[in-house]
Image (cartoon, helix red, strand yellow):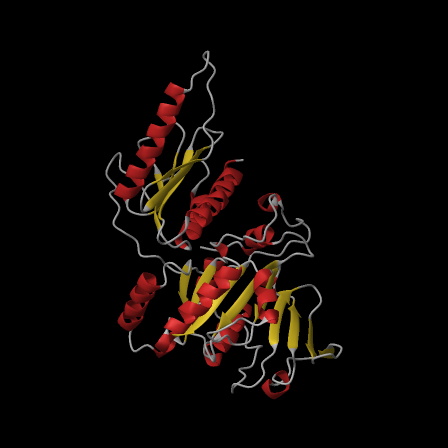
Length: 403
């Protein structure tokens, strides 16, 4: 299975002048540079030790590679390679442009470590202009009270979609220890973050991951990119989703194996929902939509009801029973609409529809070909605004496959 970075970039880029801005924040020595290195798949950013001055580090993709540091009040100073940690510590900022396809359309900014208390004006400026927040936390001390307080302060400035990146996950004694931490984070941080990713980001591991898909999977790179792909890009203009990168200049598809999600047993008896139903479009678009739903936090079920085949919904997420139940609820709504709103024999069209309960949100849309696509999620895991925009991406991807 592959994640299409070209499509992700096309959705991320509003224009050449307005990339999607991702800020990487965290407390002291929390793994912020590790996050950037894993995203780049390279150990470009050195670790700066000590609590002295730290520069703002900005990484973006571009055709012309370049690295420059800037001291307070001085002109940028170009470098052939990334300066040593001691030199970076003396700089106010460092900017690097890399010809890496997966970075195109994005601007990643590592901010100096944050502490509980008032947020400095220069940091506030970066927050106000950001689209996504990646919060780095140390695996052994993940999600302390001070972190909760800082993220709450950030979201008061701008309610950013947030990924919690747990660094040094390779230090856990067993997978069970990591599972316990994940369960705790999902419980305690669910109101603050939209996704959780565990990173095995030692410099040795990232070096091995540079030339090995298997080692990059171990490092957590594919999982981090998939989490980014599943977030709503709130900095976009209204016609953002309609924009596409030029076909002749667009970045290539970077293949990798995304994380395997736990697969629940599916009833394959006749008439049951299937997680791998075959359609005229084949499994390719299904794999793409499943990768998207897997990256979203809080999805109970998602699927497509093919036109003329209401008894066999195609599952994209969740168990067969959950897919079937949500699909039937959508079809019932469509049926009621057709019955109740038949004016002089003219059939009306049911657009995107949402049904909200105390703890859940069901959103669906009847497509032009008569099929219905739907997503059912827990509102405690994903707020309705982000859920609706995430569904918009799901529906647009499906509609493009149908066209």
